[in-house]
Image (cartoon, rainbow, N blue to C red):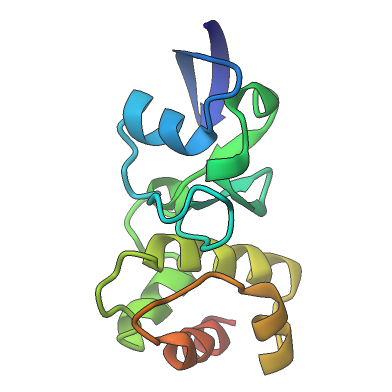
Amino acid sequence: MATYKLSVNNKPMTVTADADTPLLWVLRDHLNLVGTKFGCGVAACGACTVHLDGNAVRSCSVPVSSVATAKVTTIEGLSAKGDHPVQKAWSDMDVAQCGYCQSGQIMAAAALLKRMPNPTDADIDNNITNICRCGTQTRIRQAIHFSS
């Protein structure tokens, strides 16, 4: 076990964990930031998406030892009041059904819009590869356009 000093949601945090512990479990189990979800554990579904230095990553496949110098942002840190444009669009467009994948979807969309402020449908389809078992992909695309 080692001790890591992290920057999570613009706050300094210290955790003790094995070097290969996935960031997902550090966030959920050590820091009690449970908005980031476990979906598959193999970086395929996107439910665990967070930002590392503004880039969307699948936290289930990122070892905590690799993020010591990075700025980590979770769904809890995207905005203080849940009023980020993507979060507002998600609500306005009534995107969520079960809601399980939504934090990862929102984080992926926010990172996309930061890089690409006016994405086309093709841009969205090529960049937002998170899985939604409820079939809300059309509403997700609409919400991304609405918030751009």
